[in-house]
Image (tube, rainbow, N blue to C red; front, side, top):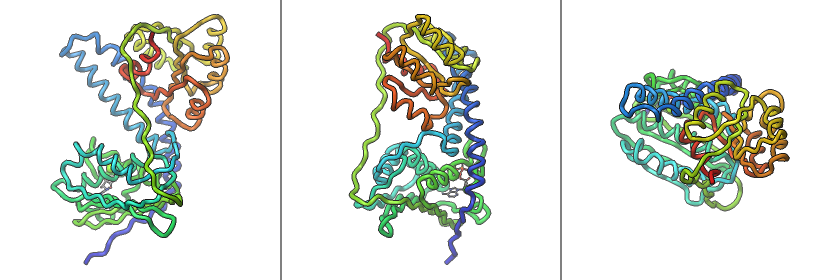
Length: 371
Ligand code: ADP
Ligand code: MG
């Protein structure tokens, strides 16, 4: 019987400096991608279906969306996206996960669910945990190209820990891969398949929840990832996920006040708003927007960038609210961090518009305000 290989995890510092770097890069990249996505999705509609230009715009949109997804991964790795802590039943999270993966990824493998029915709750961010478990399931399935079994297991441990295991019977990892598996950007997968961020996201998520992570792997036999989370003493009760966004049919045109310091974003968003038949007034700062409203401008909707010099989104919003108590505000930002969450919580009629977004997403956010 071969000995199990264990990964030792002492890389908090490496992760932190990379995290800060990733967060900064992601913010600027969001604006660049937003401009590309915005203009391409605004103009694709004018092209004859099947034409070269229409196809090219389609490819540009897909590429920008792929970039946007990578940024989301980077941001959650950097832990700069929102953390909403709630009391969670990890069994529920795993069951929802399986439902999400079932029709696509999981069809190739046998799935075994071994969930402790009396599992204690943990206080954690459901989105981050879902993302982390998802990364582990994807890795497990990737490691079983022929067939195999994926086991998801939960247990109560030692009075105050909840244990989650994701185990596969796949290829396993040789020691040199196991030693680097948690490193950001380390991947053995071909270009386009792996980003090397999966396990580093898992690591930073578990660390952020004050949990523990252990990797065990044996080449040719499989891999088991064990996570321990601090339990909340008490009963187990599932928590409901938040409801879906509902959109309404197109009814007319809006006067939109668009506040963003980035020229690229202003011109691409204006293009999108025109494509949706809305009128746009531009402001390059919160100060300029306030001056326009004080001078009598009455927009139907305000799109307000969060990160701007001067007052910025956070400084502008309360002043705008004082002048226009009921006008809906879309707070546009690449990172839904705590500052953004607080603004939304503390002001009525404010919703989040996550950068980068395309035409359809913008329309979905604006349609509820028409008519
Ligand atoms: P990616 O999946 O994008 O390559 P990860 O950080 O998720 O990035 O994983 C890093 C590497 O660790 C993978 O490329 C793979 O070599 C190895 N690995 C991770 N999980 C498993 C697993 N369950 N079985 C075998 N190898 C794995
Ligand atoms: Mg992965």
